[in-house]
Length: 120
Image 1 (cartoon, rainbow, N blue to C red):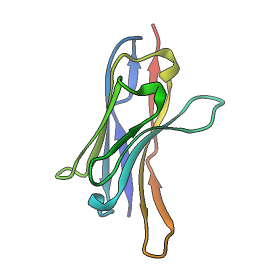
Image 2: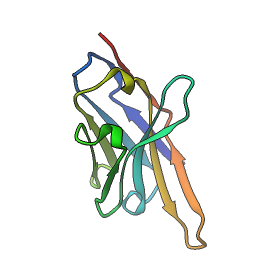
Image 3: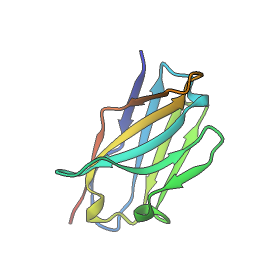
């Protein structure tokens, strides 16, 4: 079965750094766009960053210059390096895998989420 398992969340001080990892299994990792999304209490889930199978990245304006998304095909993993963290970054962070199938349908999977808390 398909599994996306996040790790690396925790408590960090404002201005600090954290690196999230997502290990994927049960999918052809090389053809999926991978992404990180986050959801704060009482708010809707929002895009943080994505990376295509070809390595093209996209970031939310709020994290540009501070976060870096990357992927490792040998490990079927995607990472999110988060620097200069702000309290507004407190949220559950979710790993996402997405592709378009041959009949034009979106196929996507989600991890269980990992909590990131930015607080002094």
